[in-house]
Image (cartoon, rainbow, N blue to C red; front, side, top):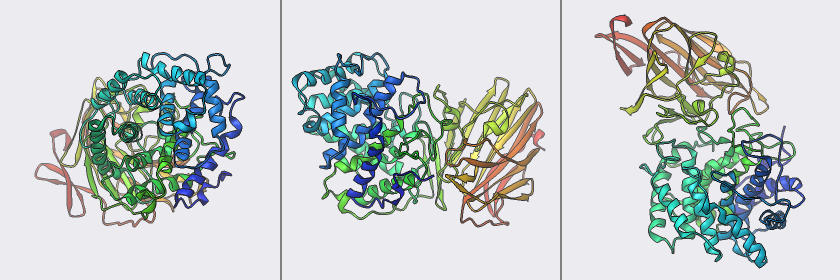
Length: 617
């Protein structure tokens, strides 16, 4: 069903086009403000915080779009409502008061938008308030300086709040602002990458949180803090040359990690890069990446029939969400509207939209543990995963699969029983009985070496798996050596072939038998799996609906394994190519026994070699 917003008809070529898209998005939420205007109720699903805070979150996140809109000289039909909500939400005597906060409080996250507004549009948010209302707003925001934040990108919420308070001459904490910036600095790795906390993941939080907020600070506080501002911009410029590999020519960005329901926030970094004047590329490059990403998203059924941006990814989907996703959470996507704050004469708007610059077909990113392969309009990031595990929902499928693809996405489970509920694409799932499967949750060790990914992991204390991943497109190879004291069954899943996607029904996939393998294909793509060595058989697995982030219905070509106690070697190959693909019957990987080794070939090229042990023979 098409949303009444009809954003897919917006060419998104000019500054006014971008503003009109925001106008339509904001118009849809207008009926859902509370009587006192301080809350925005956009649905009935729940997050781990109370509904009142979730409604305050909805109110706050709309500001990420309206603030640059007003800063750029446009008007907003919502601003009078927002200003009234700010008056009432920060008034301790009002029934819609946003309340006193505590340690690790979700409202700290939402306070950042107000610091942003105070710094960007003081004439719109601060000047119209009375002295009492200014006191209320500053006092409510000032609470953030007295409580603990989560030890991750949250530190920058303190930075933005204090930056905004400083800019309007309200009480603020220079000490807390600097402490927060110093802590973020300790998360820096190399090549522009930050982890989202000490030793934690590198994901979109590096881009749409740490770099985004830091670049706002660099631009707004450049004169007061020139050394730090210069360092922020230098690192962002380096990061841009890495992050660009996550975007395809058609505008799609890599589905990977958590918080994907923020959708087109994926491209927010590029607007912030231009805003701060830190880009290493011509402005037309950033413009093209951001606008193509928005066009890609606006073709997806992500809005309800009444125009509300729903929780999910390429369609409305509660199964892939985190516990901190409320109905208003997706509106963090509006951070990508920052270019509205740029003057019409800014190079971002004066430049022609440019395609991606020449990029390597294979590119190693050590910080996020990626080997990225680009080809045929598809980006596939092969990854080792990490040596730790956190308690966010679906951390395993979001970080620990072998491959993530712009064409095939990835899948999350809908239940604990069997391969259909588990939707085990791009991963090895093992079961010791009762049809309950375990996956790689964290690594004992992992590294990228000579373009290959090596990992060792233990699904049980008495089961050890060594996996060598040989990246490539459209074929990639997995070599698993399994040492087990128990009998196991396994499912080594390939890419999930689209069957139904955003209301489009693709033709029923055809099946072609290969030697110990299977190829599935339809008008959308082709996916295949082959067992090159070991006792395995290729089968089609039809997972439950709404497991894949891109497509409501999929089918996964899978190599099924029966593993007896002992040590066993399995070599599997997986194919994935979006349409229009060209299937080459003579370009299928094979294994040859040569000089005491098993050598894996694709055509005449040897991809890898495995020394044979006695039990392998």
